[in-house]
Image 1 (spheres, rainbow, N blue to C red):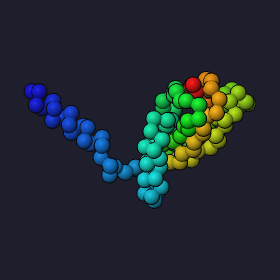
Image 2: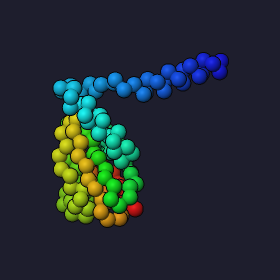
Image 3: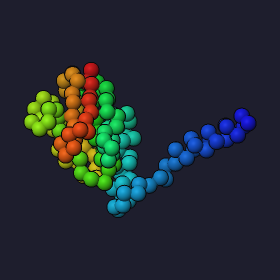
Length: 131
């Protein structure tokens, strides 16, 4: 029974590590491949937008680090700072529109807890803690 568990676990791990996985979002393949590689370079400082919102909803970074917002949904997302609709509290988070399949990055130069949302659906929110 333990051997069966080990085999099943190994299969799951290997399937997750498949470097040849492709996105099903359409497009040229070239664009999808380069954007797939972008989050790997940035490592843990990636916020992914999907149809259900931002993930993770809270992220901690150090001053001087960058965060990449990646849109994996089928629609455009518009990232703006709190408070909706004025967007004046954290101007560095007024990133604007990110088309489906694209990414944009921002670098933080000051500490603090910074809030943002999808301007097109203000109920989709997130927080970045810069230490």
